[in-house]
Length: 305
Image (tube, rainbow, N blue to C red; front, side, top):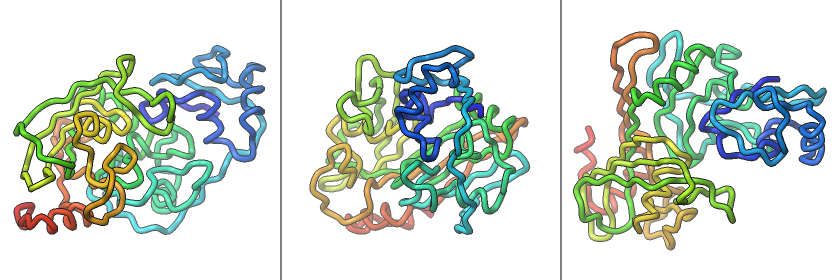
């Protein structure tokens, strides 16, 4: 089995990542296989603690059973589609791809039912078609690759800045500036590896924030990602004292309005049509969480139509 790492796996320990991919295999067994040279990174033996980098090629040569990801008849909101890729509107509450703990009910399960093996497999069966992801409770637009050629094309265009992703969010407190940029490096939180944090040794992370409307104790924002790190918006907004509404992981605190975690949506996506020059721009309406919060503050939702 061959896996090619990208931003979805970058920064994770080699043994931890492989544990996520293999069924009924202990972490100690995986570590032993790595040390024995049966798992190679870029054709070299590495330590189990090796930190995966973008572009790493991981070859797994052990006879073990891998988790089978089953297709599931789950409704898909396909916003745009052509022969090489599609764009879906992922609902809040759905995992983008399976984990060892949850292997059903994810976007990948739904994609497998509709498209079978007509999805890229560069990132393995757990992440068929997945080029980038959204957190479980972040809704919105996601690009899906139908083949490996288009997968690599999307990754290349992300790196070159040809793909533009914009988000809607409501954050705690009132932002003073109408527009500003947050430029703070982000890496894994050393004491809580499931979280990210602003760190001097982190990767360059740049977020552009534009105020749409100010309320008494909250602000509606459009956020444009110049880079695309894990939890980037949530970490950056928390770092300036304005965490995303109802994001308890990054410090929102007591909820004033009851919604599912983090009021955050990938609502606009612009990209060149694969292997062509035509510019595609997709935009969706605010999701249920954003509408609920804005209604509480008396905001006119017809302004989004």
